[in-house]
Image 1 (cartoon, rainbow, N blue to C red):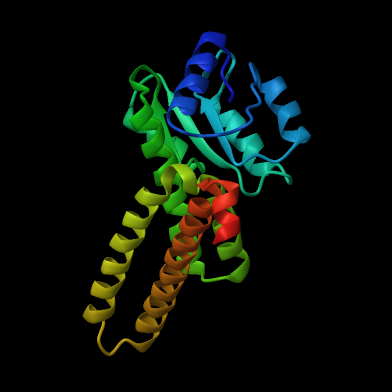
Image 2 (tube, rainbow, N blue to C red):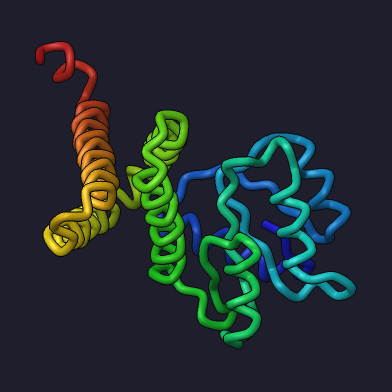
Length: 213
């Protein structure tokens, strides 16, 4: 979490915990601290405050995207307003979503996290590469306890859209092939989520019951 205001960092951390996100957090109060944090370990998700005195969250985002140890980090920008120009620039620069600081709630954080994961799923579905899909599966495993139900709904919606596209491009073999590959990727991820659901349910059972099963 990069924010030069300690109270704002504490508030965000509490809201994330209440939203069900189980994580270890590294806080940074400046670009200098942020640069040092990026060298320490790789991160799943990074919250970037836009207003940072002499710098902005976009400067931090540039550091994040250029860092060789942070290829999988999902960036979410936190702004003091929903100014369209600021939001558009953040998304164009590589943010997966944004949050308005004065409107932070548990549901807004869950929405932003889920939307960011949806974009990663879509990227993997389109690319249909083993490595990209493996990265998404690892991310789903980390976030499945919190967002699995939302993600399953998104996958179902994506499958419906893909099937509509497939039906509308009769005769365009290349497009139909790509749509079919995207559909198979979505189905694979859906099956993976269902498997994770079963595993989590088993882990939640008492040890003696698991032994009996």
